[in-house]
Length: 273
Image (cartoon, rainbow, N blue to C red; front, side, top):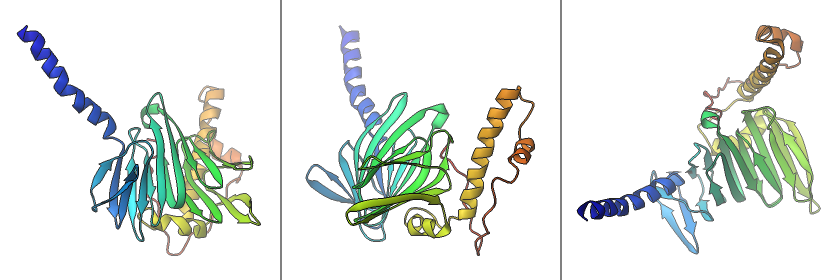
C-alpha cells in the first residue's frame, strides 16, 4: 500500500512538470521596447527581457521601436518588429512541425529551421496572401496596401518559399529573391525580383542586428545552389564529380553583385542546422 501511494504521489507531482515542459517551449520574449501579448480579450505588457508562454490563438503586439521573439519547440524563431500584430494561430510538434501565423500588419522575420534532419511546414497568412515556408530564413512586411517577402536562405533549393495570393496566383520565391506586391485599384499586383540592398533595408533593420548585405545573401544563395548541384552530380557519378568541377561547369551562370560601401556582412546561418 505504501509503495502504491508513493507511486501515485510521484505521478501526481510529475504530471504538471511534464505539461509545463511541453508548453513552456512556445514562448514570447520581449527583446526591446513595448511588447504585449493578448490571450482572449486580455492584453498585457511584458517587461524588457521577460518572457511568457504562448498558447494557440495568442497574439503578439508591439509598439514603436520595439521587438519581440517567439521561440518554438522545433528551434524555429519568429521575430516580431515594431508596430506589428501577429497571431500564433496554432503550432503542432511532430515528425513534421506545423504552424500557422496570421500577420495583420508590420514586419516579421521567419527562421524556420530543420534541426537534426526534421522537417517543418509553416504558413504565414496576411490580408492579401499566404506564405508557405519549409526551412527558410526571410522577412515579411505588411502594410494596408503592400506585401513584401524577402528570402535570404533556403535549406533545400527544392523547397522554396511559395506565396499564394487571395486570387489564387502562386509565386515561387528562392534565396536571394523578393516577392513585391502592391494593391492598385483594389487588386494585388505582384512580381518576384532579385533581392537588392534597398529591399533588405526596408525590413531587416527592424528585425535583427544590422547591417545585412545583399552581397552576403547572394554569395550564400550561390553556395546553396552549388551544393545542391554538387550533391546531385556526386550521387549520379558515384562521387567522381563535385566542388570546383561543378563551379566550372556552371560557366559563370552566377555573377557577383557589386560590393556595397561600406561592405556589410551576414553572420553564420543557423537556419539549416
